[in-house]
Each structure stands twice: as structure tokens, then as C-alpha cells.
Image (cartoon, rainbow, N blue to C red; front, side, top):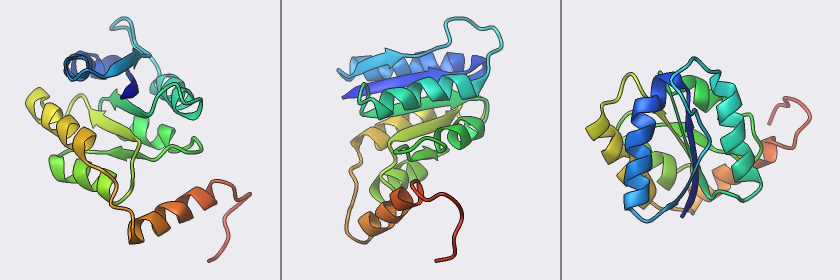
Length: 152
């Protein structure tokens, strides 16, 4: 699978762990940054991964920052991106099976390496259940094209 991955400076250590695991799993990994430990702005890095998703350069993305929250908020601003923050295996599994998440957001500060590897394994191996969940994901996609907030 083709993946685009990035982190800010606080997620750099976990990014290396995740990158190594994906490469060992035979995946095609596009590393979008950072290249050093200097402070950087997570929205810039999330935008690069999301651009890869929108252009089909990547099938899925992985974003890491201190909490994972900033990356998740940013990624969900991009059309076609369904980013989910996973802090355990269950949230990773449900983000895929119920929400068809195509971007995984991880916390470099709150999740240890062993747990992050298990989260990644779960997220990568879980498929989308479809059915009633497909209807809901379709409704989310429809909201992306609306000019403003409307009442249902």
C-alpha cells in the first residue's frame, strides 16, 4: 500500500518507529517530514500528506504530533480526508471499520512505541464494514461540498 507519513518535531521519534514498521511490512512509504528535530508547524506537514491523498500519490496517511489532536483537526479540513486520532487498538479498529478513516493520527507524547505499533497493525489490517456505516460516511462526504452549515 502507498502511504504518506509526517510528524512535527514532537513526533519525530515515533515517526521513525512507524516508518520502519511500514517498510518492513512491504509498504511504499513517502516521508513528508520533518528532516530534523527543529521546531516546525504541524499544519504544514499535515497539508503535504493530505495533498498526497487528494492527488492519489498515497492511499492512506499517517500523521504524528505531540498529542495527535492538532494533526487530526488539520487533516479533517481537506476534502476526502477522514482522519482519526487513535490512542488504543479499539479506536484504531473502529476508525477503520465504522468510519473508513484514511488518515491515522498518533500522539508522540502520550502513546509508547509498543502500543503505537499495535495501533498501526490494527489500523492497517482492519477493513471498512460498509452497510449502515457507508451511509454515514457518504453523509460526511456530502457535507464537504456544502457552502455553509445547514439544518438537516
